[in-house]
Amino acid sequence: MSETTQKYDVIVIGAGPAGYIAAIRSAQLGLKTACIDNWCNQKGKPSLGGAYINAGSIPALVLLESSKLYHLLNHDIENHGISVDNVSIDLPKMIQRKDLTVEHLSQQIKDLFKQYQVELIHAYGHVLDSNRVEVTKISNKSQYIIYAENIILATGSKPIDVPYAEIDNEFIFDSNSALNFDAIPKRLGIIGAGIIGFELGGIWSRLGSEVIILEAQENFLTTPDFEISKEAHRIYSEQGLDIRLGARVISAKKGSKKVTVEYQDQDGGHTLRLDKLIVATGRKPNTENLAAPEAGLTLDESGYVHVDENCMTTLPGVYAIGDLTLLGPMLAHKGLEEGVFVAEHISNSHSPINYNIIPSVIYTDPEIAWVGQTEQALKAIGENIKVAVFPLHLTARAQATNKTDGLVKIIAHAETDIILGVHILGANASELIAEAVVAMEFSATSEDLARTIHAHPTLSEAIQEAALSLSNRALHMPSED
Ligand code: NAD
Image (cartoon, rainbow, N blue to C red; front, top):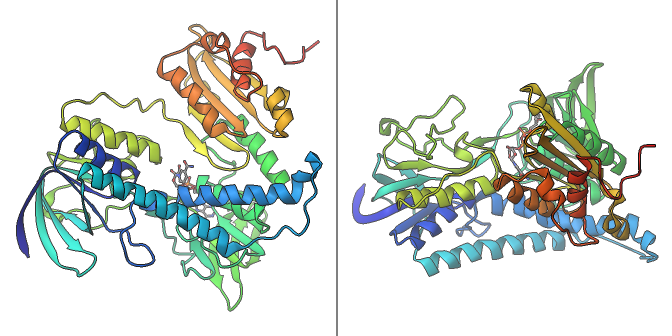
C-alpha cells in the first residue's frame, strides 16, 4: 500500500453531526483538516450528514410534517369550519420531498467544507495508530495512508440486528430503511417502543396504517418523566397506536405476501400477520474494523470506544465523539457539541460540556421534550424536591390553535428553588424546551422563570404558569376549592 506525504493537523473519520461539525470547527480554528466519510447515496456519490441526515431523524422529521398535514386534513380540519374533499396521498412525491431535503442539507455541508477548506475524502477510514489512517477509496478501492497530529473518530451508530427478524427490506425493515416504503402498509408492526419505534409508528399511523408496537418492557417510554410517559401513552393510544407492553417478539418470518410475527406476553404466545415489520430495538456504535487491533484502541464489550472526560481515547491524540461513546446520550446535538469541544481542545481554546443539561426530544405529535432530571430519578436518590404541573389546555394559545393536549411539568429543589428538570408534552415542545435549557444552564430558580415576562398568548406561558404553580400562584389554574 502506498504511503502518501499528505499530512494534516486533524483527520476526522465520519461526517455525521459530530464529525462534520468537528471538521468545520477545526478548519475555522486554522487547522489543516480532512474528513473521511463512506456514505453513498443511491447514485453511489458521497452524501454527508451520516445516518442522522441520510436515513434517521431528518427524513423522519420531513415525513412527520407531511403525515401531520394529512392527518389534519382528514380529521381535525372540520373543527376550523373548513371542509376538504378527496384528500389523497402521493407517496412517491412525499418521499421525493424527503429525499430533496436530505440532498439540500447534505449539499450544505459539502459547501461549508469547500468554504472552510476541509478536504473531503469519500472513502473508508481505518486507524493504524495515533497518527496514521488507512484510506480505502469508495470509487476505485485504491488504498493509501495519510497522517495527522490528531484524529477524531465520529463514525456514529447503526441499528442493532436481531437474529429472530432478518432485515430483507421487502417485508422486514430496520429504522434506516423504514421511511422508503413503496406503499402505505395496511398493517404495520414495530418491534420496540423506544424513541425510534415510536417516532416511526406515529408517522405511518397518521398516514393511514394500522400500527401495532410490540414492546418487551412493561412500561411505556422509560426515559422521560413517568407522568409525561403516562399521559403520552393515553394520547397516542387514543390517536390509534396499538401499543402492546410486556410483549417480547421471539420470531418474525416472511411469507409470500405477509410477515408472521410471534410474541409472548403474560397471557402466553401470540401470532400476528402483518404487511410490513420494522425492527427498532436499539442502535450500536460503528466501531467494527475502525482501528487495527495492534493500534490499541480500547472498546468495551458492546463496542463503545473508551474515552476520558475530554473525549480522548486510549490512543494519544485520538478522540472519539457522538454515538461512539457512552459519554452522554445518543443524540445528534450531543455529538455536535462534542465536535466543537474536541476541535477547540486540540486548539487549547475549549470550555467543558455540561452533560447534565442536554435536552431530549421525541418528534411525534404532540412532541415530548425534556431537560434535567425526572421526578422518579430525583426521588430515587432522596432529593428534596417540589413539583408542579400545568396543563396546556388552560392557555389561550392552545385553545386558539386547537392544540390542547399535553402539559408542562417543572421540578425544583425544595430549599434552593433551583430548577432540576422541565418536562413538556405538547405542540412545539421541541422549541419550548430551549427556554428551560437556557434557564438551567444559568442555574436559574423557578422564581426566575415565574418572574420572567412571557409573550401572551403563547404556549411558553405554560412554562411560566408551571413555575408559578410551584408556589401555588398559577394565574390560569382553577382554585382547588
Ligand atoms: P431504544 O433502546 O431506545 O429502544 C428499543 C426498544 O426495543 C426497547 O424499549 C426494548 O425494550 C425494545 N425491544 C428490544 N427487543 C425487543 C423484542 N424482542 N420484543 C419487543 N421489544 C423489544 O432504541 P431506539 O429507539 O432504536 O433508539 C436508539 C437510540 O437512538 C436511542 O439512544 C435514542 O435516544 C436515539 N435516537 C434519538 C432520537 C431523538 O432524539 N429524537 C431519534 C432517533 C434515535
